Length: 611
Image 1 (cartoon, one colour):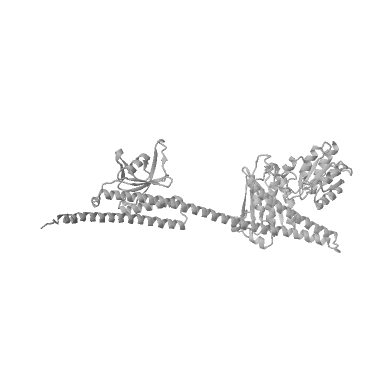
Image 2 (cartoon, one colour):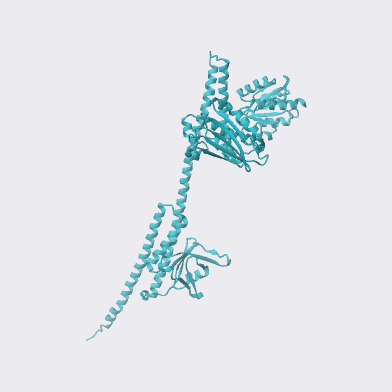
């Protein structure tokens, strides 16, 4: 009878037990690994989700990711000897040939302050101190990465760029960990490597979040800027529309009244209506000039022509211009100038403009009492203080007072005219002069505006402020150098009938013979029959451009020396220079300043007569 031994079966059962135990340990280790990684991923996802709903600072956001990674690894492996270096590898200043990284983050542990941590670089037989701001050379980091088991894991993006390094110090195992075998150390190494990948992924996702938030913020800011710009545009259009329509109502209304059939006002009434029409027209011109000035200033295109200014004379001229308005409101005008103040260097037209803006404002908001100008010298500066006994300005309104288009609510409610541009232009003009404008005021106790200008400027700076340029809102009063005879002929080339009629009537009243043509072809025909002393040339004609005609005239021997004065609505910066470059002798902007026109015609016709 054959006998079978059961030993192999028993051996087989005995051998199966360790294999089963090994499998269970491997599963347990794998669960430990996956559980720790899942916990880390969950923490990072929570933070990234939170970052989507807030706007963290980039540096603080990255720091939060690093600290989250360190804390979760510490919780999983039960170690406090963890660190992260900075995001990139730098070049040491003291050793330019060596690259390095700096320890920037360490895991939270009470023992960090009392017990220094080390990383051992076994191949180099040296220890690297693990603490904040510690410098570690790139060569040592690479050795830590390559040793078995590794102690360093690089954080690199998809393009291979190093973001930083994840480090774990090598320390003797405590008794609680003596049972750890080599496979567990390898498992820990796998955990660290995959944690480094999670960290890198989170940093890249965070970068996209921050980039998206930045683009969103820029778009949001852009939308807010557009909305603000739209509000300012609407406010500007509303203010400008109101300011234009108010004087236009007077101009159109009184003109209609004077033209109405059967209406025969007395001479005094007729003069009164004409004065209102003239005043309203000047107000429209002042509005346009304020808008142009502000546009040129904001475009950094406004220049000043500085010269020595007689301060007392200029101040008296300014008060002369406003004395009628003050008298109409029953207000007293005062002028105080320190005796040692005689001159300063500034653009006289712009200084006059600034003072008039301040004084007109004072008159608008003062119903009884006085308005004054006080001039004092303080060091190397002159202080022009315009004061009044008017309604005053609240602190809230003072904050916005110099903003373009801003108007005090009470002024708007009371129907006080204004564009909200005068003070903005005044402050910017003061700044161009190297000075400033300040305000002191209290409700119901008057106001004090102080224009501060340096005593000295560079004389002759810029090209603004020349006689006849761009229209300054004030009309000149030039005496005629001589009385013209009826033989002095003027050729007027003007496309606009009302302007042509105005200049014809005015110049003929002064004794000139004026021939008017409205086209280029008519001009050439007239020149075959006339020998004009001066040609007044419009720029925009129906069949040609006035500047082209001037250039053509300069090419003809018989017309080359005839003086040409351009009269045009071109009143922006550079227009005067453009006209002069074309070969004209002088320039005057519309609306025509008739006394200035008479002065220029007299000047050039006299020069022609003397030749």
